[in-house]
Image (cartoon, rainbow, N blue to C red; front, side, top):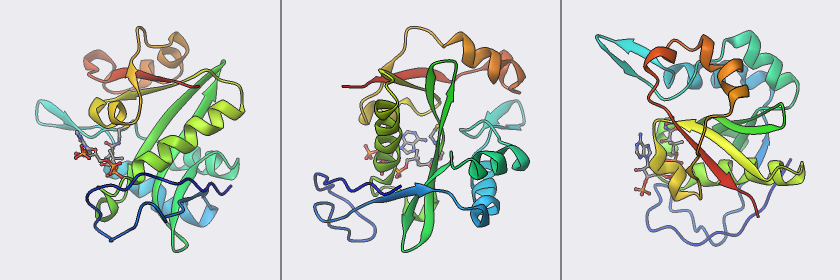
Length: 181
Ligand SMILES: CC(C)(COP(=O)(O)OP(=O)(O)OC[C@H]1O[C@@H](n2cnc3c(N)ncnc32)[C@H](O)[C@@H]1OP(=O)(O)O)[C@@H](O)C(=O)NCCC(=O)NCCS
C-alpha cells in the first residue's frame, strides 16, 4: 500500500525534510521486519519499575505479531526501504482501533506519527467505519492529530485486551476517538 499525502510544512525536522514535497510511504510490514518491530514494541511496552509503570504500549508476543504481519495487517512508514515507524490498525466487532504506534527514536519529531495515524484513519474510512479508537498515556499526541476524549472504552476492547493486561487494575490509559469525515 502506498499513500501520497501533501502536508503543511512543520517547523522542525531532524532530517531537513521539506514537508510540502515529502511523499510518505506507508506499507504492510514484511516478515523480515518482525524482529525489528517486536523489539520496537517491546522497548516501549508497559513494564513495572519499582512501584510505578513505564512504557506506553501493550506488549505483543512475537508469534502474535508475526501472525498480524503475515496477514498484512501491520503497517510501517518506509524511509529509504527501511521501517522507521509502525502502527497496527486492529479491527474487531465493528471497531477500528489504532494500536502499537511507535516511531524509532532517532526519527521522532518529524511528524511521522501523523502519517501513520492518517493511514489508519484512511483504512477505517475505506472500510466504512465512522470512528477510530485508541487507548493512550500520551493524549497530547493524539489530540494534535484530531482525536478527542471518548465517552466510554468499548466493551469489546476491555474483553479482548484489557482484562489480560498487566495494568488492568491500575490502568491510566485514556480512551480517545477520531470521528471520520
Ligand atoms: C508518540 C510517538 C509515536 C510520536 O512520534 P513522532 O513521529 O515523533 O510524532 P510527531 O513528530 O508527529 O509529533 C511529536 C509530538 O508528540 C509529542 N510527544 C511525543 N511523545 C510524547 C509523550 N510521551 N508525551 C507527550 N507528548 C509526546 C512531542 O512532544 C511532539 O509534540 P509537539 O510537536 O507539539 O512538540 C513517538 O514519540 C513514540 O514512538 N513514542 C513511544 C511510543 C508511544 O508513546 N506511542 C503512542 C502511544 S499509543
